[in-house]
Image (cartoon, rainbow, N blue to C red):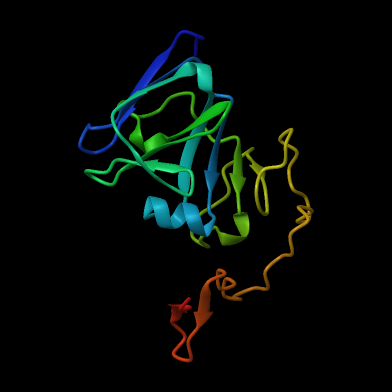
Length: 169
């Protein structure tokens, strides 16, 4: 793909539109709980471009750094200081040639019926700077025990019924 290739995308209703120019810095899949919940799928697929290659129009609402359309709820981007993460499913043209994932995150949460992406780096948790594969879970974070439930977030206490309830202030 040439450096002047323009890709465009939008949310479901078209209220938020964006474009990116050139090749992405990286392309990945994430199987973490947050990405599963925000995508409504078993994983999220995304590509990251330098912020200079990203343009957007429309009003977004954000939660946890992720941008959503306030009308249709479609997740489209996550904009950071120096880069913009675009959800591959929000791009207008498919198939998305040239956007094959080079890595997968949170592979311990990958569904058993999904296979690793061939030749993609595999990370137990978040990506390590420099794209070094996480061999043996060396992220400084403890590995969850198999089938162990996620820890309850702060401000939430586990109820005896197994459902989490918000703590009162």
